[in-house]
Structure formats: structure tokens, C-alpha cells
Length: 116
Length: 113
Image 1 (cartoon, rainbow over the protein chains, first blue to last red):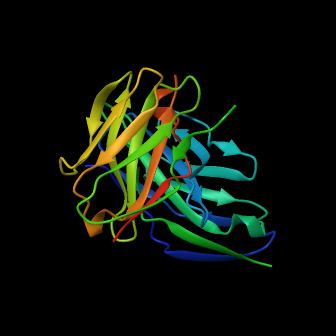
Image 2 (image 1 turned 90 degrees about the horizontal axis):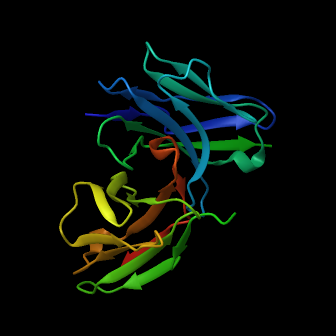
């Protein structure tokens, strides 16, 4: 069975500082992908970054980077230069190979609060 | 390019009623997935449709059903509503990159009273 674990229920960061949100995953599949999403209080799930299991480079998207450590089965999100608008819930999610069409397994989320 | 559109944004229904939610994917995307989000259970996968065919289904009772039309728009239906069905329902669309992309709509917040 696939599982995503986010061990930080809440995180606090000062504006303009960097923050790392933890995500570990469990799967026996060799082919899988990892996502990070941001969910503000409005409810929309906003795509941030994606990393495939065969991607050799860590994914980056602007201020977001994914620290992918395959052997440790971790896919931590790093947000550089935090902004007040980054305050939201953050979810790590995974799809696995085979016939898991459209199915993402989500972690429980981490609430990030950015202080001015 | 328009994103994923879900309608309505908010719904209040009474126990025992049924409800239909709509999701219009990103233009050109043929896969639509549905998720239920509750504080207690988190995000759970309901089902996925591709070219009008259900390819995958989560562990939900038969009261939850869906369909997809030839223009890729999808609807999900919940019959005989229960209080526990109160949730945020999110849909995601994926295109040619298949499982490597999933863009979500703003969700429909359903309250059952």
C-alpha cells in the first residue's frame, strides 16, 4: 500500500527566510511521482512542483524546490524567501505506477504560517 | 488558458436528498479525478474518468457515482445524502502527461444538514 507521511502539523517561519516542509513516502513501486500542493483557506488546491522517481535532478519551480532523497524515501519541499502569501496548508501527494489512474495518495498536510 | 472549473462553489442539502456536482477540466485534458476532503479523513480518492470511461475507483459506497461526457466534463452524484458527506469535493484534470500532472479546481463545499 502507498502511504505519505507529513510529520509537521504546523510550521512557523519569518518572512524572507527559507523553510523546509517534510514528506516521507512508502511504496514498493519503482515508478512513481511526487507532488506538492498549496491549499489556501479558499480551498483551491494549487500545484507547486512535481518530481518523478526516475528524475535525476531535484525539481525546482521559482521559489520552490523539492529535495528528493530516493534512498531515504523523502521528498521535502523547500520554500526560499518566504512571503506572507505563502501562509496556507501544504500537501505532499504521490501517484504510483500500474493501474492507479488518476489516483493520488495525500499526506495529512502541514499548516505553514509566515510571520512579518 | 482556463483552469479547472467546478460548480457550484457552495451547496447546502438536507439528509436524504441527492446532489450533482460538475467539473470542467482544462481544455484538451481528458482525465478527470474526484476527491473528497474532510477534516477527519483528509483527502480521499473517489474515482477517475478518461474518455467517458471510469478507469479507477476508490473505496466509497455506491451512493457516490460519476460520469464523463464526450467534451470531458464530468459530474459526480451523491444519492441519499448523509451528514458525513459534508466535505469539500475537489476535481483534478490531467492531460497528455497522464499521472505526472494533476491540476485541481476550486472545489465544491457541500454541507448536509
